[in-house]
Length: 212
Length: 212
DNA sequence: GTCTATAGCAGGATAGAC
DNA sequence: GTCTATCCTGCTATAGAC
Image 1 (cartoon, rainbow over the protein chains, first blue to last red):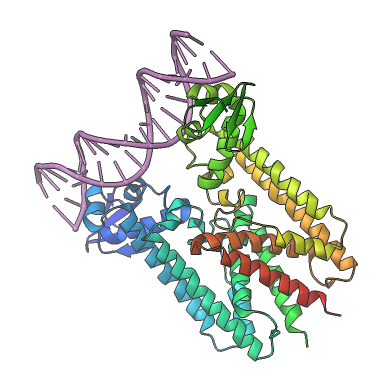
Image 2 (image 1 turned 45 degrees about the horizontal axis):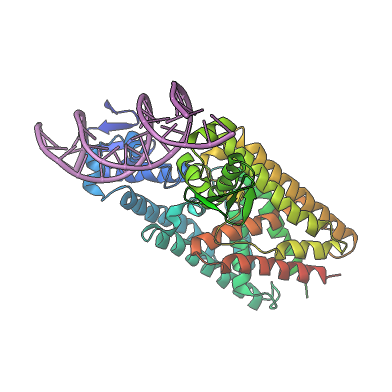
């Protein structure tokens, strides 16, 4: 690190910028990384281009050169976030263990309760109906629900969950428990509610799976 | 209705204003009603005083005469909303039927999935940490969680739910299912996800309650 | 590709007349 | 109590130099 460049990024001789621990080769990537953080922290509507510029160390020109505007940048950033999360999900749902254990592992994933879900937090903004933003968020959840439903169905076939349960409904419920847990943790400003909701879900599945 | 007064309110001879079907005796109440609607539709941060004035038919002066500002108006409106919701909850939790049926009735309450929860929708705004706003929202959920936990415990005593379950955790989970259902319905722009999550929760409780 | 300067508009609050 | 006029600030985007 040689010369300090703006408030938050460093310019290094190789022509790369550093924000926190991330390395990037252009202002474009710096803008995307900054947008990802701000989308998580503030959501789409409260994420101002000015804040993105300050956090990335880029100027107005870079933003409007690489992206058509705030919405385009946000869409790109959200695609990126989906990729990150799916790397985690794939590891869990792709693991070689029983379906019921995969469901438990999903519930047990580490989550930053106080920061909220990076996609779910957008649900109550007007932009959730935006033709560019909505498809990205909706696809994320649809894919996740599909994955969960497949595991529920597999667990039923393995005899670990009652076949009387509707797999899609149950998958949606598990998804809702996590999303609702985030909401309640934010309201209470405490990670416990999410922990409690997830713990109860696991207890529920265990109780039910030990049935005839 | 005699004379048209502004865009949305009517002045009637008795000195009362009418907005939609509501009757109010002053601009103060008109402002509160308008704020309640806008808080539901847009949340706190996106509720502009200008929009409240337009919806209530009041002028700037009335707002800042009756309230110290936007936040004060919102707090008053939210207290009002809590009162409305508790009128419904009290009817359900106070009914003379078994605890498990009260829980089912709670899950079965009609909900406007696409509009979201009037309190839960505020969870991801910065204002959820506001010293005036947070206590109101938090108290609403704390009281609801207490009510749910009492019913879970009563159902356990009645032998309708396994005593192995943690009552508080289970209550939080039921709460989360509803909140998460709202989130997912908003994302999918479809009332089904909330319906599915609630349906699965009921199926879960039924399955579990028919156990030894 | 990146920068600064600036336009245009909306949010939130205040001042002071009626 | 209620109104209108006005102020200041910050958001989003454009213009145009380097």
